[in-house]
Length: 282
Length: 282
Image (cartoon, rainbow over the protein chains, first blue to last red):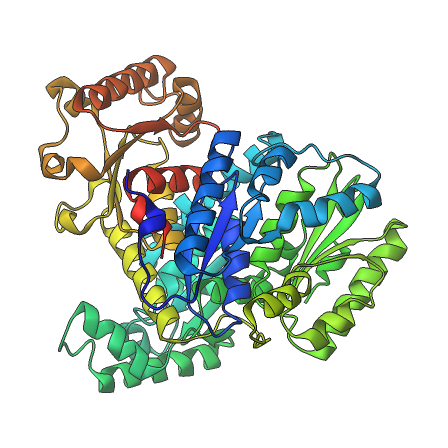
């Protein structure tokens, strides 16, 4: 297996490590959002599943190696649940941002309970219910992608509408995967604009419909990648479709937002807040 | 809009808040992984997009209200980038776990640079490239779900194989969404077992194939939810398919793992580490 710590990033000012005894996704997401606040380039290295003393020592070697190469201390974001693993990594010549140890000790005091210090999520019944809910939601969103099926729309938590390539599919999948929300999506197509009405199968479910729009020039760019030079991708046609779609959503009283310059996470979270605020508490 | 802070959770010992000026996904993921280490029940409330002084004051009211209701200080996990918003939330009667402020000041000193303290991800060119890569990967994974297409398999980063319902689809989509990795997936079906060979279209791409297996009793459970009482879902048939699939993967020298009792995130991250370790540094 190639040693990923040796991949060079041109002009990086520092190296950042994301170290975890689990997937490291949280350490990375947090570290990344902190580092983007500094106008510097970081070579970023993920070290997931550091769940033994040996792997912790390997991590230390990689950090020390980066220090020797860069001449500057690497920044180490870690979420190591086991104190003995955290203690090993702490010996490395890096600037340590230990998320777990920083917060767990004060929490133990506040809650009057000792933390279990067990690795990974506990696979208890609540987790398994939650897991099945996410899988069901993903299957639902896939089966109801792009207006493929009108069956069982009453089971949908959210129905996204918008012109082709406005961001409906990735948003539906993200809603399902992150929040366990069943999100169907329906394209608004020229037929709908000519009729001047929403697809009739959606009318009974208006309360859970949310619209996505997009800047016409961005839409044209995206469509041109898919079908270069087509009428479908032409700026003029994109302007027409977006304008008609926004007019229709306004007329039908459908809440909508622009997906331009927003991340999938931002779009999904904003929609959830609008349509299913009850899902914000659990 | 209903006030989500009023949704009751039976027998909750405490309330936990996840507060962010962005989506709050990182604050929630981190807080959740810390809290699962304590054998207590938490009522959990997400407050995303707290990006103004007014919204910060609203958050304070919700925290104080939960304190009054519970008789115990809520635990407040926050990722507020703007110091003036963090300062408002800090006035609330909760136990404060301020992820950003805890780590940004020491980082400013270490890096010798002042943080921008700007909200959300910076929508710069690197982010936009990364965003397009994720969208492309999602579209690729959707088009290559369940062996739908053999076109352009050379563009795949990873090809997952396994029996129906072993977790290939959610894993492919997660790989695409989280890591921007193009993941195709192919079912292994009784025809393949009778022939005793991998689907021939996969043979040129063996180096990027990864197998998913699953415990037969769990598989039978999952399939019974979909097609109750079918031969497809029968334990005996599941045992046969899993056994044949594992035999074939062994014979063909394909790396594989069991998806039983693992989260989608864990499976996806383990596969990435095996097949594309180069994607761990960027």
